[in-house]
Image 1 (cartoon, rainbow, N blue to C red):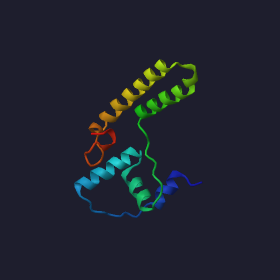
Image 2 (cartoon, rainbow, N blue to C red):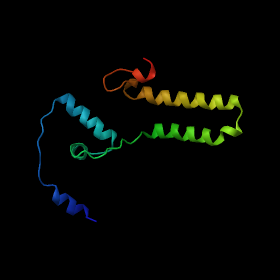
Image 3 (spheres, one colour):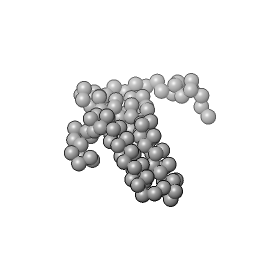
Image 4 (cartoon, rainbow, N blue to C red):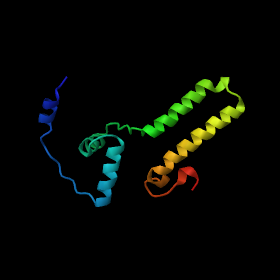
Amino acid sequence: MKGSEEILKEKVVQICVRVSENEKKKLQQKAKKSKLSLSNYLRKTGLKQKIYPIPDKEFYQVYLQICQLKNDIFKLDIDKIDECLEVIEHNFLVIYNSKSNGDDEDGYNKNMGS
C-alpha cells in the first residue's frame, strides 16, 4: 500500500479548467456534500468513479428513529405507532426544509408537493 507522501508525489500535473461562477459554486457544493475536496471530486467525476454523498447527521438520526420503530412495531399499539410516525415525519420535514429552504438544485420543491 502506498504512503501519503508517495501518492502526493504522483499528483504533480495540474489541469486548468474554466467554469462560470455558478458552475464553480455547484461543483463546490457537490464536493462538500460528498465530503471531498474539489480536486478529488473533479478527479473522481472525470474518471467516472463512484461518488457517495454523505448524509447529514440529522438525517441519520431520523433513520435511527425509523429503525427503532421497525424494531418495536409489534410491541406497540396503533396509537403509539402513529405517534412515532408523526414525530419522524416532523423531524424529517424540519431537516428537509432547513436545507436550501427545501428546494432542489433548480429552486423547486417538487418532492414535497410544492
